[in-house]
Image (cartoon, rainbow, N blue to C red; front, side, top):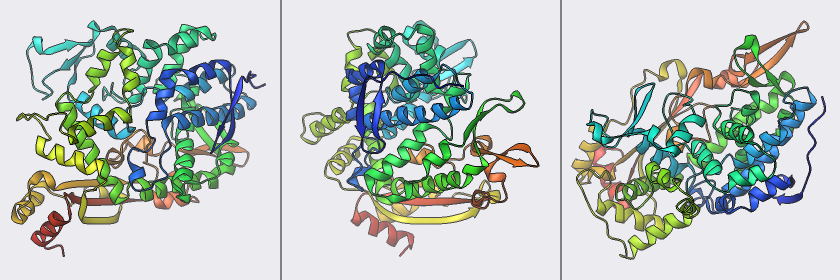
Length: 509
């Protein structure tokens, strides 16, 4: 089968992939303010506080994802798959982060948690928002039916929940709002995309599209993961993230075994490159994202955003939905960037923004103001306890947690430290669990077994092909590594003084 012809309009030089060809439609999207906004959203949150080179942004990354998705679909089209889908896949790659939050997944995780506590599904025909957020029964007056809002309706119709979590606040779901509720929609129409194709692009981004092209943007072997790993490695100087991407791409195939659903798989000839990719991803996360000081700044930023959101000083999911209500308010989304977040922090630090306190607030004003000052002055929390241990996977689910809140609070009281300044951090890490759509603390939670075994290879024996999970291949190093889990347990506190007090009180010295 021939490859869909690409009409290049211009080239953009990328420091990771070299010259990237873009079409007229892609060029118009790139030049739009809503795509240019991605220049002001750092790819790795506050990791540059530890690795100063990590200043790359979602703009660079989105170009890279489009480029790698294109390389993948070219190979698949040469092998007879996905005819006529090249421009859709490229555009989905380009727009996949168009709805991203400031500071990437750090802010997103806070907004998602807040939204999930307030969105309830009483029955399949009635989706509601619990404005009280406590999960209890509330009066009808306290419920807002999503069907009354065209914006909520769009979010629901385009993004049926992948996992029942009703995570409407996910940046991939927000992407549909940016695509349909901003001038991005008219740019696509003006460049020959029809309404059905634009819907398909949004569904490819969210992973809800039924056809296999979604896998190039949304799977364990997607262009998103490939680009962030190579780009993060190059920008930070941490070489562990480099792997033989071309060897993987040249051996990818689309399969649909027994009509159970499409999968991206890799021919056995590319297995070593695939193993290298997984181990590289594991070491990159261990070195960059799980690094103790990087985790410290993640904890701080999430507490600060929570405190700001409680006081109406930072956008919740529901605030963002209101932004997309009409053409006049939607332009406010352009200012929802890293810059606006730090502008708020500076105003608080200068005393230009007062902080009120209510009993319902999770983050009290005194702690919030201290955290703001610490973030602005790059003063991390101090780790006063850490335990890292590999545990056999078969025992991991029954292994009781090491960090027990009652014990932590008792030690804090003994040390004369406020409970809120003794912050536990727990994480369970498996070699193929590191997911770019999660914040670091979320990435530590167990994923479903089917997700874990999603990476599969095609093995040939006696002229017969067999599709097997890589973790089940006894000749693969992943088979051995997959049988253990790394458990990371830490406790952070405010400063060196508090650290020494806690260590002494806990007999950890």
